[in-house]
Image (cartoon, rainbow, N blue to C red; front, side, top):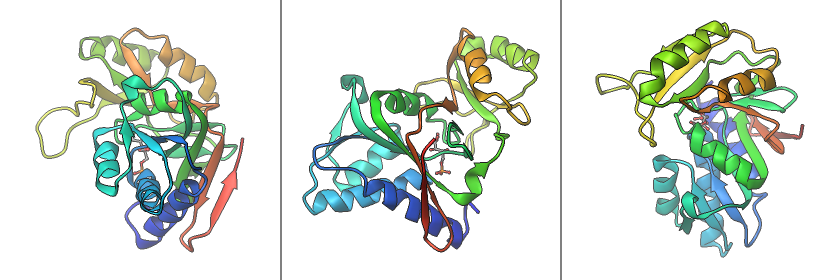
Length: 231
Ligand SMILES: O=C[C@H](O)[C@H](O)[C@H](O)COP(=O)(O)O
């Protein structure tokens, strides 16, 4: 669904619905990706109409978009608490309790923002829902720890693939200067347990399993309808 007109309508509907839940005076985490971008654009329109918010970007991309649409920005490094964050996901468990994120390699900053926010609003089109998470889990890795992390992931039953750059020879390098392993574990029956395992490995900067962080999930469909669910 990602590049279809229906997919785009679904993403827009979800993003704009979550942007409507931001209130005057909020400090807002601005997620990364094509769905969060719709929320950022809508927030920019609301700022132009007088909404007073301050944004904290999760990536180069979301910072550039927020500047373009006129959202005042604070640096993530200066902010310890946010009122709300709006962010996308690569896959969402139907019980809304666990997500896979990091398709754009922004999940480390996204998780800092998600944990800092009083409310995390997740936005997604309906193709992202899954009863069992089976999307490869992005793992951001210190370059020197690559071989070690690959080994641990394999021992845990995963198949790690170093993410390759497009239009550049070699690997993706994150905004933080690290590498990304996309780790295919098949179906993840216990996301919390896998999250603990990955977090315990030295050299793992952050992984893309977000467990128990979402406060609401806005799911859009091709007709532009949005369902809001909470775990
Ligand atoms: O690193 C990127 C983020 O986690 C994105 O929020 C995620 O990949 C979803 O992106 P999109 O809305 O473009 O599918």
